[in-house]
Length: 455
Image (tube, rainbow, N blue to C red; front, side, top):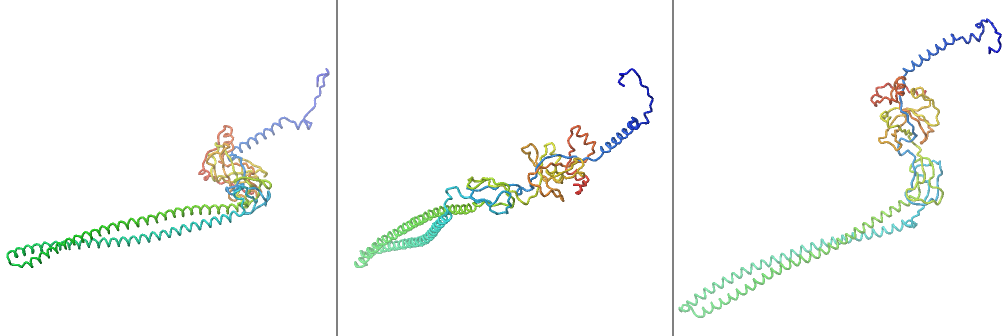
């Protein structure tokens, strides 16, 4: 066979009688292989027309649906020093349970009797405030009395002025009457002088008329003096009226000035009283802040402040706590190009870290170890990582594993439109995005058969 020997071996043997030759018959092998290829092609062609569910892939972590159920840190509202711990990491605490006791480090609150002494200051200021109130009340009564007295005095002075005016009028009338008597007496005297010169009247009668005339002249002078005196009384009454008005205006103004000064002192005392009461309330509230309590029931995750005697300022983090009763949700981040495909109310399949799964992205009904979710919120502004945040809650009737904890990783697949396999291959080869559609189109689709037993 290697042509080493020049001798030739000529053997005519029927090879078909050998089993090895029959097994390696080329025609039969090609025939079977051709059938296999044809069957595979038929299967592939059939599979090309099977429905394929498009999806948007995302990565995220487990969080809680409500903000008040998420892990939180407890801060100290006051500066202090750790004195005693009442819990350890991993303990369960109820709402209001004491976690740690802290003491004051500010010198303004070192006095153990600070609250009692502040109460004494508040009571003293209350007495001062009440004194000013009573003084204001007394001054109000004094002003009212001065107003009443002024009204009476002014009425009395006005009556005297009226009397003086009436007396002036009376004296004026009397003066007119006296002047009339003088004129009559003068005419009578003139007639008697003429009659006496003619001898018709006696000299004694003439002298009587002269005396009467002189008396009338004296009466006129007397009435003029009375009129001047009554007019002077009118002036005196007016002066007295003005004096009374000025006097009582001065008294009332002084009383009102005292009242306003007292009111100013009262308001100042009221302001100081409010400040003291505010300080007392602050001290009372601050005394209750020495015990840091749990804001809600949950588990102590980690003690941020350590040891005993460690000091910290206001707002320092003391411990972190995880609420016990939470509604879990998945926080997913999607690319901006996929954001138009994600809508509230759409279904999502979720794979949690630590749970075994068999997942067929195009056939979610055949998957195992995935859990159903529903999109409940889509962020309106892009996150710092350049993606949009989507919040996913459990679907109605879906039960997520109980041991899940916040922070566990999750992979999500937002289920989109149903398309043939050949279309999906053609789309991915050409690099086209998934089919864009809205929630209205999703409502028109047939609901998928999500058999919980297969999940």
